[in-house]
Picture 1 (cartoon, rainbow, N blue to C red):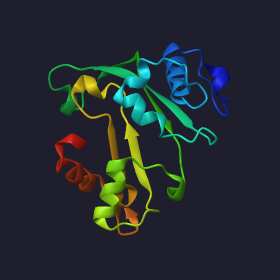
Picture 2 (picture 1 turned 90 degrees about the vertical axis):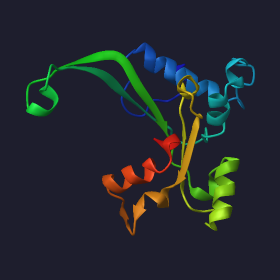
Picture 3 (picture 1 turned 90 degrees about the horizontal axis):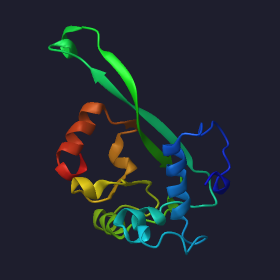
Picture 4 (picture 1 turned 120 degrees about the horizontal axis):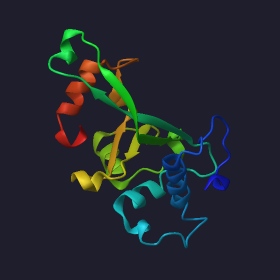
Length: 171
C-alpha cells in the first residue's frame, strides 16, 4: 500500500498495523479504485470516511502506541511506582486540513449550520471512528471549531468536559 502514498516525514517502520491503516486509507479513494473491496464499502464507517479527504492534498497520519499500566492497591493516587509496558495495539489517526469553503459537510452538519444561522465558511471538525458499531455508537462526529473557543482563546479543559457531558453520545 505504500506506493499509494509518498512519505514526506518519518517511516512506517514496517509495522503491520500501520501498513494496514495506510491500506485502509488507500481503499477510501473509491474514485481512483472503484473495484476495491466492495463488501467494505457497504460499512457505514467506510461510506462516511470515503468523502472526507481531498486526495490531492496532504494527509497527516500518526500512530500512538498502546501501553499497559500495572499498578497495585493504591498506587494510582499514593505516588507509588507503576510498571508501564508498551503493547502491540495502537491508535492510528489520519488528519487533513481543508479550507472551510472547500469542505464537504455531511447533511446533518449542513442542517445544523442552517438552523444555527452560522455562515458556511465556519470551520468544522469531522471525525469518523472505525469500529464504532462494535460499541453501539454512530461512526461520525462533527462540530464547529468555534464551539471549542472561549472568546478568542481555546476553551479550557473544564469547559470542554462540561460541553461533552451535555450529550452522552459525544463522550
